[in-house]
Image 1 (cartoon, rainbow, N blue to C red):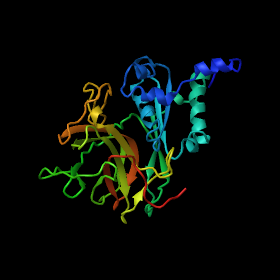
Image 2 (cartoon, rainbow, N blue to C red):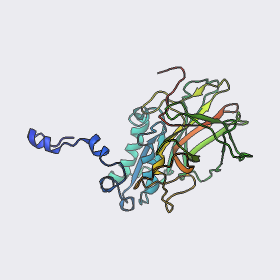
Image 3 (cartoon, rainbow, N blue to C red):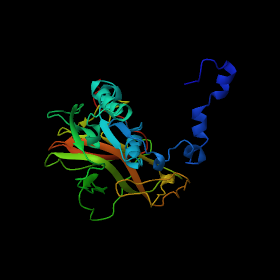
Image 4 (spheres, rainbow, N blue to C red):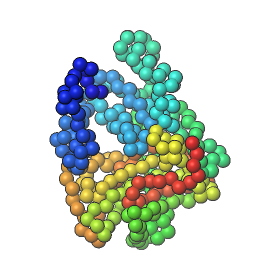
Length: 316
């Protein structure tokens, strides 16, 4: 990482940078970040992008964006669960990599070119799992991301009862929460039937703040019939929720040309402070997810001003 061993201590010292200081000096998406970012239109080599459902805040989003945005005509997306090393650095992942590289680097006719473009390890909540890790993954091949047969659904926040429902509220309501607290949770009724949620998500919120800015942390959660939260082992945390999204309210401006209903794009090139008490509309990206929710379980969205913290029983 530091270069050849022949470099002197002085040369090595000159090559080092204080990354934290560099990031702190560039709060907006300026030339510094654009110089580090790929031009997807120029990426035409074969691509195998391997992501992790539990890599929220890590590189799950980059893996999916790389697959979707790359100009290559030969690209594949694989998404697994648990820690990265559990799947990708053990036989399952090594075999995928070997097939990919054998085909494109060694010219082996192993059928990789006929491989479906998307391979998912779909997360299932085990029957009887209460407030604990679900742990079951079912492998499934798909032809596109988002999935071609996706049935897009809208749920609406009902602040009067902290409900999440498929119909709009009858009247305009609001709810307050402390920025440093646990936020407010909006929950569906218990699911009538087993429901799969696989793909990208997004939220549209109308917010006001007592301050000139606000950090919005969104958490998609599942609760069992007893009211305990079901979490999965993730890449960085043994207690990872279903999905998460973040947005600083002053960065709310959208790139209208790139944005989609399920995928808002924020250029982060300028900050627009809030007028305290004024209502603002935010479109918040929530990172991709996959989970099969059993009947009787509830889906929930938590809105808070700080990062998620699991409050259930610990397991490792």
